[in-house]
Length: 411
Image (cartoon, rainbow, N blue to C red; front, side, top):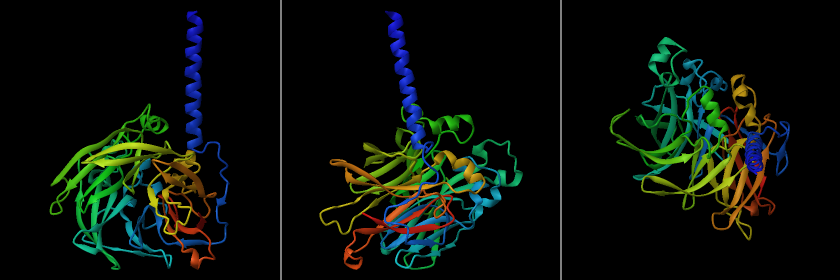
């Protein structure tokens, strides 16, 4: 009898392990055709917009804000989020851009009062409480340490190579300038990925990994919430009149999730993304804490979430969670190093926590039109001006993409 029990336990363990590995393979795109192409409204109307390696997109009052790099390809030489520390001199050309969604033209903002290295990642935008025609832009910056810039000593541990911090800018809508307010640094903000602003100089920020590089980082990425829930999210309040470590109060806001990555607002709450696990956690804020209420699971990696509001719902409201990710994330690290495309994928999950979610694919291709995707926003098109078609403009970009891409999608 003991042998039968032992056999049953062993079989259950092997079955669970196989299912876990299979599920991770699905999420990472191991079984997906790398040449698959699907544009749900057809292939006719693609718009290409200036902006290289733009990790994040945010729609605010008819403007799309993004943070990019000045030249495509620098991620393969310096990008601490992917454990790339080869050439810190390439970290300095980050930029903020504003896209006009009607003309499909982007403008690079002049960064007044800012001259540091700027390696961009996640951003958020929040209205200036004193001026409705102005915003604060909060941006992750993976700058190299002064020591590493001078020494180029590759034997240094990762924490002595990258000095990641948050930059805060003020921008008057329609102007060409973003004025630097302050830099925020804190010991709890170790590997920042994305931000959700709670005030002009306060925010939630995800630390997407516990391990910065090496074998244990790989173990962490390939794990799940059940096995490697080692990352966290922090809430930070900073005094606008101080800089760096001064005038900063930070507390842990969320623990116990895997690969805390993208953050985004949604009606009544926020979304916290487990990127490599392909899980979007629906949550709410209690004071300075984040409490998880539910989840949406995807068949790919996902990244920075946004919420789509269907302005012309009729009897079919498609409002929901918009998630960009990678169709073949298994290729990610090697592709970034050699400046190759990683096939993108974009999903829309319409519904609510109470009613459930209906997830549909909006876009994927072989990476030729969009060479990676980490963020997307969507704007409804008035059916009265669009032959009564229920459609929207989908704007997509990626941390390793040569440009921002827009296309019409059916809803």
